[in-house]
Amino acid sequence: MKKLLIIEDNNDFLRLLSSILQKDFQVYQATGKKEALNVLETVAVNAICSDHNLLDGTGLELLIKLRNSNMEIPFLLMSGNDDCCLANLAKQYGATFCCKTDVELLEKIRKL
Image: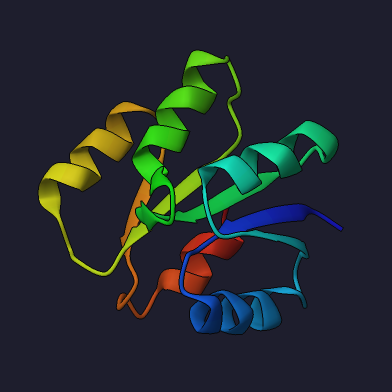
C-alpha cells in the first residue's frame, strides 16, 4: 500500500481527511513543517498532501525545502483560498495546487 503524508494544522480536517484516505493509503500525519520533516526522516512516503498555512510556516516553504534537497516526492499543496499566485508558485516547484473546497480534492490526492 502506498504511503501518504498529510500535513494540516486543523486537527478536525486532518482526522477527517486521514480517515477517508486510509482506505487508499497508509496515512502518516503532521501538523507542521518540523513534524513533517521528522516523519520524512523515518518513513519513505510516496506522496505528500500539505495545507499551505501550517503551525510553524507554510506548505510552500516545505515544498521548496524538499525540492532543494532533491526530494521529488509528488506534492499536493492545499489552501482554503483559490489563490492563483500560490497555484503558480506550487507549479513552479513541481507540485499540484488544489483549493480545499474543490470537489475534486480527494480525486487529486488519490492521483498523486
